Structure formats: C-alpha cells, structure tokens
Image 1 (tube, rainbow over the protein chains, first blue to last red):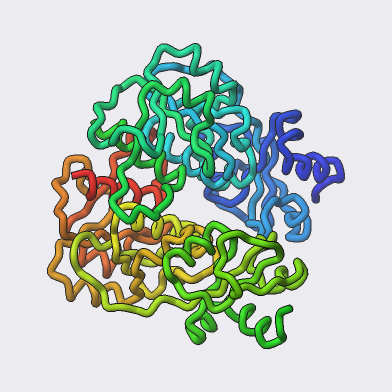
Image 2: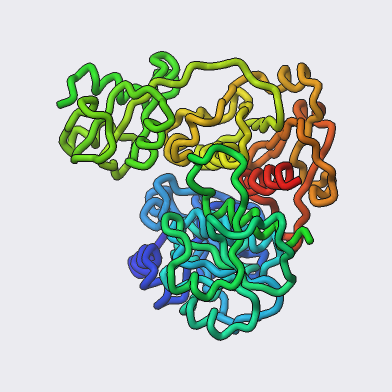
Length: 239
Length: 239
C-alpha cells in the first residue's frame, strides 16, 4: 500500500523543483536500481510489484500495478521503483580531465555522457546551470547506475572557466583535427548544446579548439553530442 | 484535407509490414524532411500545418492540426510530415569498411549509428534481419537525413559473414585493446545487441576481437552500442 502522503511526495519528484527541495530522486528498472544500491547510494524507499532478487531485506514495499502506474514516470512502468537520497554534494576535484557541458538539453544525451565519464574514469562532470537536471528520471534511466560514480557539479560555467588554470579544450566544427593534436593529461573539455554548439561567451574562454574530421559527404551536418563526447574522451585517454 | 484513403494508407505506415508492402515511409520534423528532399529522395506526399520555407512548390498539402495528429507517429506532432518512397535496393558494395549490426533493437541507437556511418564515410551498413527496421519513424527521426546517404542492407548476417573474404572484427568485452591494434582499410566490423552483445553463431565467424579499454571502476558494465560504434569507427578511420 502507498499512503496518500507517500503518493504526493513521490509524484512531486517527477519535477526538478521538488527533487531539489526533498533531495530525493526516482530510479526505475531492476538493473538501474540494483546498480544504485550496490554503489552505496542510500534508498529512501523501494516499491515492487513482484518479488525481486537481490534487494535489501525488509526495506521494500509490495504494491499493485495500479499504484505503480501512479508513482511511475514511465508510460510502461517496470516492476520496481526506487526513491534515493541524492549523494552529498562534495567540492569539485580538479585533477585530471574534467568534462564540462554547456547547455546540453536532451536527457538521453546527458545519461549517455554520464556513462561515458564512468567508463573513461572521468570523476568530475561540470554542467552549466541550464543543462538538463541529472536527476531527471530519463537521465537516471539512461545512466544505468553510473550516476553514483560520477560527481556532477552544476555551476556557472563561465565563472568556473575563468577560475581554472588548466587548458580549456572545446569541440567546434572547424577546430584542429583531434587525431593530430597532442592532448594533455590535465585539461577541461567543453561540449556544447545539441543545436547551437558552445555559446559565444563560453567559446571565448576556450583555448584549444578541437574537431573530429568528417570522412563522409559534406551534407552530414554534425555528430550527436554524446557520440562526439565518446570519440573525444577516447582520444584524451588513448594516449 | 486528407482523404479517408490517404489517412488509411499513412497510418498503416506506422507499421513495418505496410511500409514494406507500399515501399513508403514517414519522416517528421522540418530538418529531417528537408534533408531527405535535398538528398533526392522522392516524396510521395508532404503535409504541413503551416507555411514552411524551402519545400517544392505545388507538392504540399495544407492540413489542420487535428488531421496532423491522426497522421503523426509522434505524441507532439511537428508542422510537417513527409511520406517518402524507399530508395531502390542496390546490391551491396564490398569496398572499404562495412559495419554490420547483429540484432540492435533500439531505434535511437540505429538512428545514431546511421548518422555515424554517414559522418565516417561508411557507405554500406549491413543489418541482421532481426535488427530494428531502419524505416521505423523513431529511426528516421534520429538519422536527420543520413538515411538517404547510407545504403542499408538487411540480410542473413551469418551467411554474409561466411561469404566474405574480408577480416571480420567484432566488439567484445574481453577483446584486444583497440588502441594497440593495427586496423586495416578493408574490414567488416560487427556490433552486437544492447543487452547480449554478439550472438554465439556470429561470434564464431569473428576473426579479430576488439575491445575499448575501461579507465573507470570495474562496476561500469558496458558502453552503449552507439557510443562504442562511434569510438571504433573513429579508430578505423584515424589511421
């Protein structure tokens, strides 16, 4: 059973405003929920419509499919919905490669980029304040648990770039061929918005412009921001 | 105005069976439709709810928002819906790098992969027959017009791999480090399913197993198939 108060609280978490107020977020799907639990993220509540192996004993509430439909952010809910406490916000660590996003709006792209950070051992992700919320349910679902292993810092990107002494790389259509660039071990890599790329004021702070050469027809307009991030992080790491 | 027959035909194209029967498919959104038109793909019909610049004169039908909602595959329809003839199926060209997909199921992933082929000048994409249909409306939307510039061949993947004399590379979790591999100019690269990777019978045909090293924690389970494809195609092309 879900009480009225619980229902009100959990459906409020569909919105960023209330996620931030309560410092809670929703994860759905067995794989994602189990990965968040393994990552030592603290569950606030776990709801299941059927038995699920591997859950902490005595911590889950069995509910009906109709109730799950009310709680869920999905059109087709899964058998599990977890509510988690947001990890405590730590201060930004400035070693190594830092990825910075300037106004990335698509939840699927942000989720994929968080997974990429996790894969490539990028512990710090900086997001401009207008980047999509990392606790948006669609982002959480796309990260598959990587959310707990990458520290995500929302801040005024321009101020951050002014304050750093690292070289600032940016992905630009007419930048230097990344395959011919010698990339450092310490740097910030800025990726821009899906339609408009890196904004003008941020672009002024970029010291090294990188591009991924196009091998196909001139008509191909651009790579998706998540696939471009994949290729550039791979280039920074491959040595 | 949309006639009853048109309505019936176009809504039938939401399903693969009827797309194949009529050899027609739907594209929505200005950017995608204009790119398909520029790529010389033949429009069967174009429907708009408002004036759109850049369309062929005398070829568009103005309809109401309610009618568009009936035709559209989207929850929130755009101002334009195009119905296009599928390009004529040509025979597979076997020069260069050929990308082969084994049971990729997510339309967004296939769309992203088609855009990657276009970017990296991979003219031939081979899809196993159980790979998601490339004329699925969600795929069409994710390709942003690249669909017209990449030849997509659905076939029995195992038979194709038996018939080729090229080296067959495959992305496998415990394969050889791709950054240390010398990659040829002529090859087939096989990418597997989102959850299960490359199937057993196909894996037996793979002569060179490649993997992308993980730099982060051991817990990160895998890269998304589209981002892994991005990194591997980049490696084949960077030289």
